[in-house]
Each structure stands twice: as structure tokens, then as C-alpha cells.
Image (cartoon, rainbow over all chains, first blue to last red; front, side, top):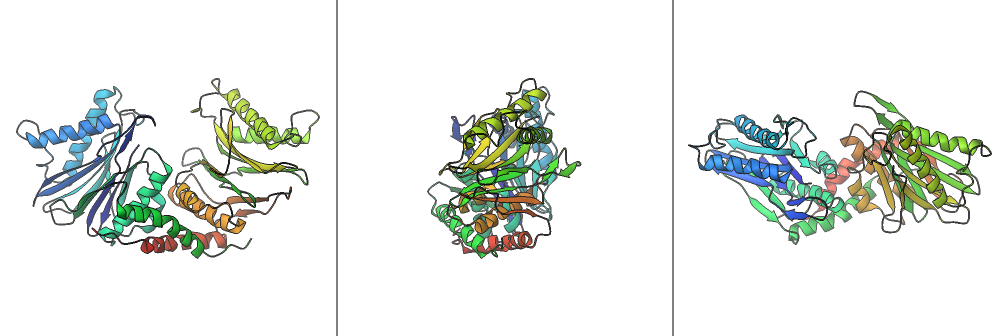
Length: 243
Length: 243
């Protein structure tokens, strides 16, 4: 499994993904699930993936090849006129890759399935964030649903639902995401450190702060260790129940 | 879906279950998923169920009939010499009911499946808590894993993992369970109020405090409303992250 979150803030976009892949519990590996493309001053695009690793790697490779030999293989992510067209392009590649390995490519339960989070900004338009389904269709984040999760989403959802605010700083968003990821990692072996983190600051049109959070990362350790205590204090702060 | 938690404390056992059943999202109903049997001074047995409602109702009805006409239908829950034998009995009934409707009763993915939490005490032995699988086998809670969840378990797990303590009072356990259930209910339509709650105080050999928590329950409202604030305060209490 996998856990990735893409978040729309007033300041821009935040992406976090884990790096664990597994085929059974006895075959685990580390793979990057976050990929970015950048044309400084023109566009920044970030993609995160959950699902069949062969599928998601093929999708990224096809998109990547097109950006490198744009004359030969089109359309390219770097030439699409809008994030909506980028999303259509990525979704089409995803659907085609799945269909190639699965004669009935429309089946949602296909073993070759993958789900993607795509976000970014193209000069002259607002930042946008999409969730792309294996069927090749997609939805966009809005004010009512300002973040998307893919993979092992349930453990880390309650804290996001309760504590997300669109006006939070990037640092507060990272704190929130670390707690969400830590809750998931503590409960499920198929999500694991290190984590990849990336910001995109609205209007900057260059890739923002980027970091890999290793298992021994001091901030992550402090958040992980502190959260148990903080939660217990939160519970204690609730009114007592009369039985 | 469903959400039930059975918990072993130093003081005894605590059980909480939701009451929502659904066949699709457009067909939801309220059914009790917690059932108890009691012979004051001799034994107390509580059963919670998740899964196919026809299966779990059949299991409870079969167990119930046996207790009412013990001469005709044996073995009865009320005569088993130990909680282990009670668990074997319940597991056998569960497996038989599933097999009856499913020619391949051993398949874990059967649509007729159900999972049970069974807890209680029989005079002269310690309280015990079991998780019974649809295959008819079961595991017992111990010091390392002192609580079991069935149904929609993931949303509410992180708080249990972090805040459970074996020496907590019944009132604190209820607070913790309310938070765990509230987190689940907020994120998943297939788990819903009202909730059923029951304690068993070790050694008492009578059913303990029992209550149905309705949607307008003042305590639950206070916990649910307070938890968002408490979580945000907990996040704020964590060390800031240097980017």
C-alpha cells in the first residue's frame, strides 16, 4: 500500500508521500512516489501515485519521455495549455497503461490499478489539485474538499478532517501531515518512512521547499513522540463523563 | 459496515458498538449489534458482531434458543464450563451459519461473512476477551493486544493505540471510545449513532452499567465538539518545525 496527501492551502500546495511498496508483507522496498516537472516561470507540476508500482512507474516514464523528446512524442506535460489539460493527459496515460495489462481496463478492481494526485500551476492560471482514478476520470479539489488522500487513507483522515485550515502556514501543514502519516505508519506495515515532502508557493512558478524525511529526522521524531502525550492531554482536557 | 470495540481493562471489560447497518448507501437501518447473556453469580457473556446481518442475527438466535430450551438444544452458552468453551461454541455456530449459505464456507471473502467479539467471565475463572473469525477460529486478547476492533476499524485505531491504558477508569475508557467512534462516524457513512455501551466489572458476575448513546446525548456532543478544539490544541502544543 501507500499513503499520499495533496493539500490546497491559501499559500499554495503541499504534497507528502511515503516510500514503502510491498508485494506481500515479506517483500517490501523503498520507491519514490512523488515526481515533479518544472519550467521555471511557466509551470510546476507534481504527481503522486498509489497502486500497482509497475503501472505508476510506466505512467511516470511515459510522461517523462514525452517531456524530453517533445518533437517525437506528444502531447507533453510541458506544453499543455492548462492544468485541466495536464490532468486529462495524465489520466489518459494512466488508463492506457492499465488497459494494456488488463483486457478489461475499466474494472475498478483490477490488480494493475493505480490512483494519482496531480497538482501544480501554469502561468496565468490558478494552482489546481486533482485526484485521478484508474478509469481515467478525475475530480478537482475545491473549498469544500481542499485535500486528497490516496492509498491507506483511513488512519490519517480524522486528524486532517479536524485540524486542516486553508490559512495554515506551510510549517503548520507539515506538522499536521507528519501527525497524519505517523498515525498511519504506527497502525499499518504497508506505509513506511522515509517520507517525501514538497511545497509549491502560489504564483512562484518554481518548485518550492523539498525534503526527504528519514526515520531518524529530528522533527519527525519530536512530532511522533510528542503526539502520544499531546493526545492524552487532549483526552484529559475533555469534560468528564458521568456514569 | 459497523464499528465495535471490546477492551480489557484492569477493572474489567468494556464494549461499545454502533447500530448502523447498510446494504448500499441508500438502504440504512438501525440494528443492535451487542447481545448479552447473564446468570447472576455464575456468568456474564457479551457478544458484538460485524458483517452480514442475516448471519449475525442467525448466530444470536441460535445461541439464544439454546439458552431457552437447554434440554432440547445443546450445548448452551449458559452451561459451558469456561469462556474458551463458550468461544468454541459461538465460533462453531458462526462457521455453520456461514457454511449453510455459502457452499465454500471457508472463503474469507464470502458475502455471508461475519466477525465477532466475545467477552465475559465465568465464576472461578478470569474475564476473557476473544475475536472470532468467520472461518470459526479465534484469538484472545492479552497484555500486548488488550483490545479488539471489528468492522470499520481504521479511522478510530490511532487514538486507541496512543491513549489506551489498562489502568484507566471506566469513565476514561468511555471518553476514549467516544472519541474513537466519533472519528469514525465523522469519516464514514456506514458507521452511525446511536451507540451501545456496556461495562463488565471483574468478579461481579452480573451485567454492569449499560447505556444507549443517542445522537443528542449531551456527553457525546460535548466530546465530539470538544475533540476538534482539543486536537488543534494538541497540534499547537507540538514543537514548531524549522523549514
